[in-house]
Length: 126
Image 1 (cartoon, rainbow, N blue to C red):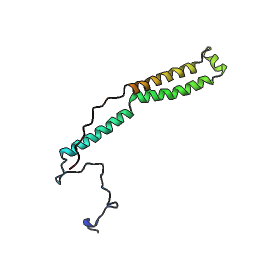
Image 2: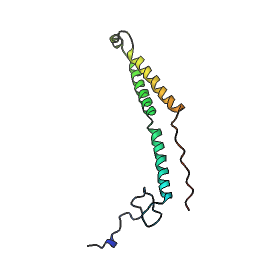
Image 3: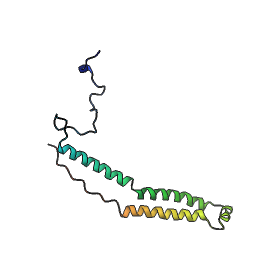
Image 4: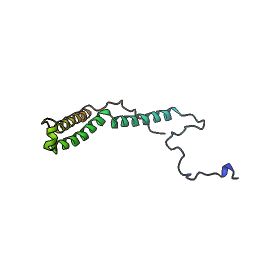
């Protein structure tokens, strides 16, 4: 049976948990600097995720995509389909309405982006 000291990880050049902050001392406690660095990184990731998944972007994008599809269906509608809707090209009007609503949401997002608290700068490592 191999001795515990003989065991070497397969990839010894890579740290096991590179995403975890390093301890400042051997006691296993995080220093104030490590905690602050971790909080700053998480705040930055959270702000990016909030901007990416802003509900206005999702709603606006979906309405634009579906609006284009329904508008194209309205532009290619036959006379029989228009007669079913009592002479109104309902797909065309609905598609244009969806496009307008989607553009409104995306414009709102562009004009009023999310505001985030500034992330404090850390002094350089010593």
